[in-house]
Length: 113
Length: 115
Image (cartoon, rainbow over all chains, first blue to last red; front, side, top):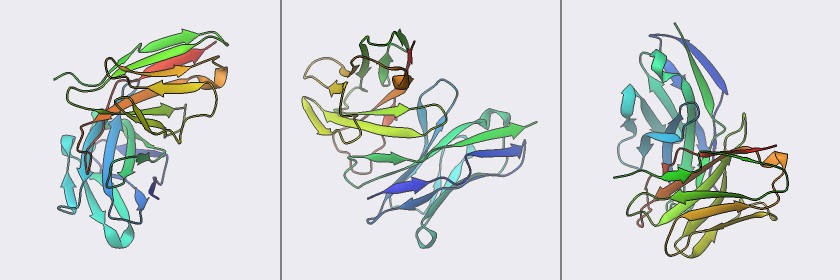
């Protein structure tokens, strides 16, 4: 069975600082991994996904994530935080059939001016 | 190409009433997922449907909740005899037929408030 764990339910960074949101997964088969962003009162938007191609995945809005099999991690990073990045971020894993997507509990990112 | 459409966006129901939430998947998508998001919690999977078939309903509460995705028309999540604990945001997502490695695309959500 697949699952994801997001360490840190709340993360605060200063504007311009590095953003690092952590995600560890558990999967008995090669996983597909996703990061989604949710702005207040809106649905989830896809930031990026890993599907066994390049281990470093680039997404929208300057975000990227690196798949590290040895660490079972898929952490999300952005070199320089912007005020507009303040949102809830969800890591997700799916099985290869796409029957289910398992979401983490989310990390709320606050950007301090 | 319109995205996943959910309605209503906001719904208020009194305890004991029924709530119906609708979801029209993206064009060309034949798979629908429903998730529930409670305050300060993550997304919880409820049910996965294809046209006229429930594929996985392992996340659905045993009573009062049902879902369908008819041959024609939107998918509907139905909650009978709502209680205060049903207050949540309900998100629908869809994906295309070939799902391996595919992304699911979310609607804007339906916020249910039970008073």
